[in-house]
Length: 164
Image (cartoon, rainbow, N blue to C red; front, side, top):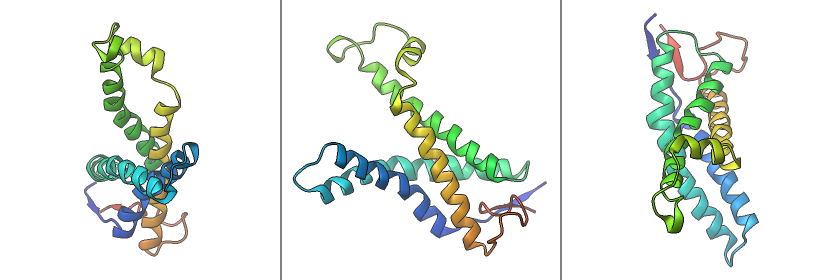
């Protein structure tokens, strides 16, 4: 069940870029400034730090490890993208929790209480949706780069990871 890791540089460069650009456009539209292009680039750059970091240091290594044990289907790849992104939202929630007290001081309740009360808003769901979209784009781009344009052919060999 040993596997080899193949990936597409094109998929690695383009897949994590989509959601930061979309979010940058949405944030700039919600609060337009004097220079909308600069605002879009600014928000996209901030989002890219998180997106590329999670893809390179969390998503790809996890795909590699899982590919050692099972075939990577589209469903499994997308599920891993969403779950890993939800886990990546926990540090952001932790920072929000630490600053949730009176005058940004220490919080009053426990972190679990904070998550129950505030943890499932739109800002929480943005992470799993972004992880899902990034995983789907990575799978699609790696599929095209490997020359496998038919998703029914060799299921599990199109994410850039392959069982040997």
